[in-house]
Structure formats: structure tokens, C-alpha cells
Length: 340
Image (cartoon, rainbow, N blue to C red; front, side, top):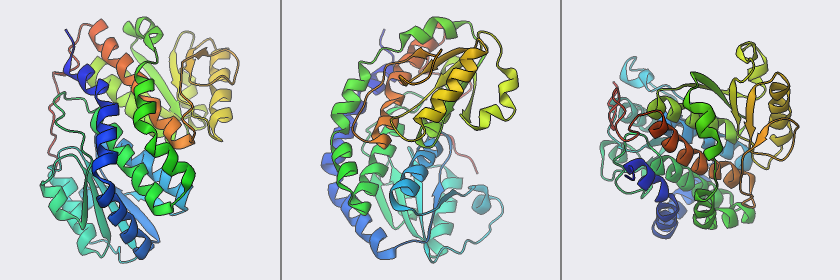
């Protein structure tokens, strides 16, 4: 039986292509508004997988545009009812459903605080799309499996398309335009070598740095959601400041490296952990000791990083089934989590 999660993973290249074809006007309009506002700071509003997408876009905005980006806790609005002074700022809310009350509440607070507010949302109309200045439909289509996959990927595709239009950098524009093809190639990368080692595991680490730290965070969440397997994400630098104490022989570690300036640093940490006899898997040809996982070179570090999540999703869906679970229906979860 093909699970819904597997079907939605396989749909990632198609929905990316649809988004880039259909949302060009909305993205160009949002980019123009952002250039006009020239924000001094940007805040992000999200939870769960959407927050990992926001974390990815934080690094992308800071790297490409030099604007500091910070995550604001939704409880500031929904619980504490604190006003925000954002007259010189912008806010980006990200949500699959657009329905969680605390996300909507914070988006409204950011708007009333003077921010230029945008939403990357998969449900239009929705309370979130109506709470912001500029909603952008990420066009991932219905996502039925509880674990978000294609909506996570398309949130980042939409964000990268926006950053490319805003910054007007030809290299990023070209890489974003080629994403459907690259994500299709990423579907064919085989990470099944991870399934058997992780099938009986109780815990593992996911490592990254910069944009790949967001990918590592999303990977850890999917392990918990679909496999009932404890996973923690760390910066490849931060893991050496304490968490390394838990790394013993055969402890699993997946290190997500893209073709960027952090690659050597991630590979060095992965090599150091492999020297401790940990079971380390690395998406790089650098370093010595880790087991190599296949990866794509897409022509840009940011799209390199995004492409890593696709073969991981395929692997974790297979791992869930290998552990005797149904990845479509995690027993303790539901699709829309309406936190207040």
C-alpha cells in the first residue's frame, strides 16, 4: 500500500512547479511592497514544520538581504496581549491551515503594530490570510497526511521566490526557477541505508548549520511524529558544547550539509563524532569517517539545502512503516493544531 504521506512527498516537484507558475504576480507585488518598505527588521510567526520553514527563510533573508530576522512567540499576542512596535518592520506568518488562533492573533498584532504583514499559507481564504496585508497562496494543494511534507517544501519555495524577486539576484532567481526539476531529481536519491540502523534506535541527533539547521530541525520533528523515535536537532557547532556527551559507539547522527561556507565545519564535526565510533551519516564528500548520503548540487547553496529534505522524507516514511507504524495517522496527533 502506498501511504498518503508517500503520495504527498512524490507531489513536491509538481506543487513547486504550480506555485512558481501561478503565484508570480502575488510574489512580484509582495517583493515590490517590501522594497518600498525597506524594513529594518523582519519577524516570523509560525509553529511546528512552518516554524522550521520560517527558520530556513530567516537565514535566507539574512544571507541574501542582510536584514535581521527574529521569531516572535505567538503567546505574546494570544496569552499576554502585548502590543508590538513594528512601524519600521515587516512580518511573515507561515501556516498550512491558516487556522491556529495564536498564529492569527499574532499576525493581527503585527499588522496593528505597523508592520507590513505577509502570510505564506496553504488555505485561502482563511483567518490568517485575512489577518495580513499580503497573503500568498503556497499552492501545495490538499495535504491529508498528518505530517506536513509538501506544504513545508512549498512554504520555502514561496519564500525563496519572494527573496529572489526582492533581492533581484540572478543566481537565486535561476536556482528557484529550476527547483521543480531539482526536487524531482531529489526524489530519486536513495537514503534507504538509514532505515535498518534506525529501525531499532531509541534516539539520534540531526546536525546542520545555517539553512541546513532548519532542515535538521524539520527532520527531527518528522522522526518524532511518524516513527515515535526521539531525535534532537543541533547546530554542528552547538552539539560540541554539551550534547556530545551522549554520543557513544553506534549512536546515530545525520549531518545535513549543503554546498556552502558551513560545509567544511559540518563535515569536521561529523568526522569528530565518527572518530568516537558514532554511526554518522553525512551529505558531503568532505570529512573522514562518516557514511556518505547522496545529495544534489543545484547551483545555489539555499536550494541545495532545501533539496536535502526530499530524500529524507522518503526515508522517514519507510522507517515509520519498518517500525510497525502508519505515518499517515500518528496516534497522538491531528492535522490542524489550534493552539491559543
